[in-house]
Image 1 (cartoon, rainbow, N blue to C red):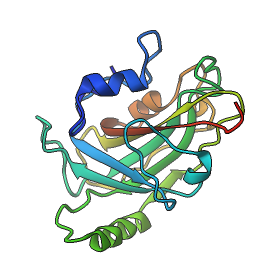
Image 2: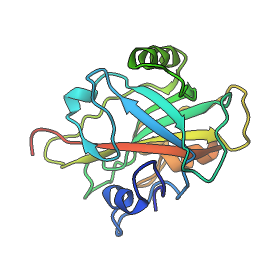
Image 3: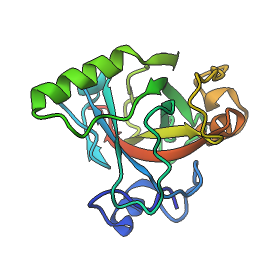
Image 4: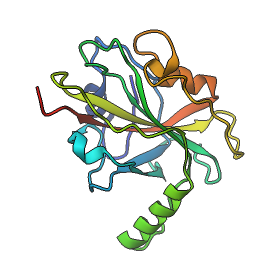
Length: 213
């Protein structure tokens, strides 16, 4: 399984959208302790498998991490340093993932968002303030699925340090975007996270495809 609990969405409705039974899994199963919200300046949002045109995701998105009240865990710590990675397991296509995974983004210093914002304007201000504190380990590469390769999954994964430290993280930058610098098909975010002492705590994803099919 990919991940097994997200607020207001039963696990059985999430997993079939992301990983087919015959496909290799690119991250270990985990029980989310946070909810990850992703939104672009185009006003498009990641909604656990919605389809967004490539033109609408060209700019760096805003990230919000919220406590997951339905989780049985209590691992969320407000002063912990969280990291979000964006990976494409469908390069050049889902049927032929010989280039996967592709590393599209790694940003660290993502804080837990306050649940006390009184109105949308306050929430937007808090999000922008948080965005200014982000450190890009790997610069944002917008989704750009090639022509005639069908829909690509673009998966956002939020990570926390496995040792629970609140100190600044010194994360390694992948040597390459393709395979995240490793050798082998569907190599990438899981191995990178393990090497950097990170564990997944939240996820979200979109589909995107080239207009020429």
